[in-house]
Image (cartoon, rainbow, N blue to C red; front, side, top):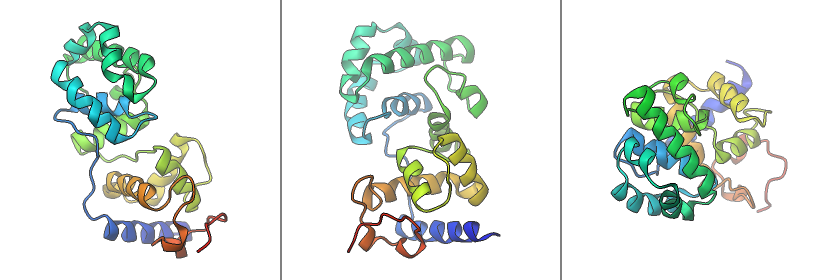
Length: 213
C-alpha cells in the first residue's frame, strides 16, 4: 500500500467514525423514484428535491405515467429544482426508454443505466448503490472538490476521479465512502470558507488554501 492509499484509508476510518450510518438523502420508495430524484438533484439541494418529489410522486407514479404526462405539467411540478425544461425532457425520454426497452423497470447495471437519456455515471452509481446495493463511487460536486483538496486525485474530470478513488478505497466501502465525503462536504469542507480549524481531517489534508483559525 503506497502513501496515498494509506492516507486514504486513515481518512476513510475517520469519516466512518464521524458518520457511522450514511444513506442517500433523496426520499424514494422505488428505484424509479430514486432515478427521477437523482436527475432532479443536478444543481439543486436534496432538501429542495424532496420538497418537489412529495407532490410529484403523488401525481405521477410509474415510467408510463411520466412518459405520457403533458410536458408543461411536468415542468410546472419540477420547476423549483431549476433547469426544469431540460430535466423534464430527460425524465420523459428516460421513462419512455424504460417502458420500451426494460418493461418499465430500472435496470440494475451501470452499462444499461448510462444508456438511458439524462443518466450519467454519477446518477447511475447513486441508483446502483442505494437501490441495488451495488458498489460504486459517486462523484458529485462535494466528492470532486474534497478528493482533490485531500490529495486523493489530481484530476478534475469526474470519471477520472471516480477511477482514482476506486484504486484507493476497498470496493466494499465505495458507496459509504462517497456518501461520507458528501456529508463531510456539507458540514466541514464547504466550497467557500471550509471549516479548516475544526476539521477532523486537518492533519491529513495537504490543501494549501486552508482557512485560518
